[in-house]
Structures are given as structure tokens and as C-alpha cells.
Image 1 (cartoon, helix red, strand yellow):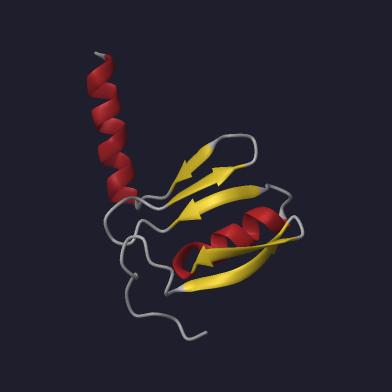
Image 2 (cartoon, helix red, strand yellow):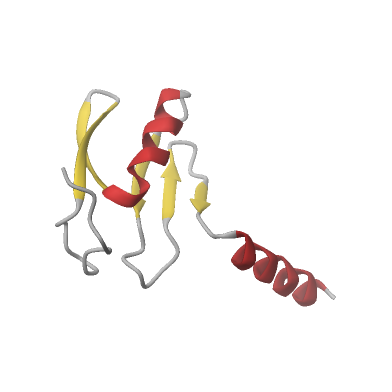
Length: 88
């Protein structure tokens, strides 16, 4: 598959990559596929993921019911500041 230039629209599956996870085929959004592959290679089983399609933060749901949210450094700093402000 050729790397897409932008995310596909919300609810579409134009830019997915088929991956075997726990013996089952899963279609994974191209832009998070490398992270999904690394997690599963490290025996951290993923059960669902979404790249956010340019509208939401990318998320990865793990088998243990934890959810990873992917943000850049600037977004992470802002989230931490908001969290600290809400706790005061």
C-alpha cells in the first residue's frame, strides 16, 4: 500500500492495513499501524484503534481495557496544564 497523503474521512476505511492480531485479521488505520505492530510484537495486545481521521486524537484500546491516546508534545503539555488546573 502506498502511504496516504492525508487521513481518510471519519467512518471510512480507505487507508487501512490488514494485520493479524491474535490470529484474527484486523483492518488498522495506516497512520497508527506501526504503533499497533510494535505493541503487539511486545505482547501488548490491542483490541481496537482509530487514527482520529484528523478530527479526534488517535486512540488505541488495549486488551486490559486501558486506552492509549496519541498526542504530540505540545498537546501533552496543554493536557497536563489543564489537568493540574482542574485539580486545584
